[in-house]
Amino acid sequence: MTYASGAIDEGDCLAAKPQGDYQKAVAALSKDIRPAGINYFWLAAAYAAGGNTEKALATLQKAFDVGFHDFAALDTSPYFAALRRDPRSQQLMQRYRK
Image (cartoon, rainbow, N blue to C red; front, side, top):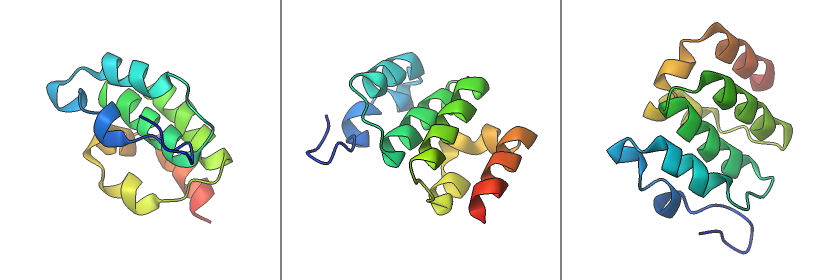
């Protein structure tokens, strides 16, 4: 579900994540995605949780490019736990924290 603002309702789209069905979450999040930071954040979360580091990093880059800067969410979300240990992710986040 998307709102008038174009933001994705993560409750609807990520319902598959607790069951580990990250491909279903990616498909739901990718459908008609609007270029908004929060939308790319949730898509990157699905990629990261599913172990697709390359796509997670590329999607996080898109999130930052459109103005996403919620580092508290990135720092605490369990979906990004493995990604936070990746040096490329650390470099990317450090570049945008400034």
